[in-house]
Length: 154
Image (cartoon, rainbow, N blue to C red):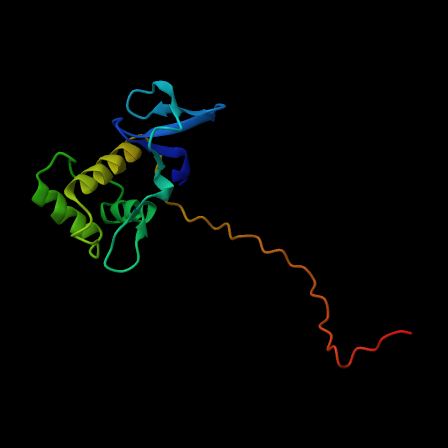
């Protein structure tokens, strides 16, 4: 699942898929109504790949939160994002038990649930194991020489 091509734009409802890059903008397509438009650099644009959730330990990427949703809900949609605050908190606590309840607001939970349901509906969530490992360049190492034992040619 490549969340780097899915964007959230401040002030605009929903999520957007990157279509192409222009000189001073990114052309995006709304996942809600499939309308395309340019998103300019002065707008606050966030890739879902860059978003992480506060926990009591290390922050976890949004992708891992979506994986937890998908696994625990067995691929079914999450609760309605318009549910009451207590229901949303209880749901999120089941999905991510160690989230930081002081720094993750109900509005954040509401967005995540809404995004998950939208991505699931558009079939943009793919949790198959990515087995690609970073390629390591195997270069032969030069033999280490001890400067004291090195002989100099005259």
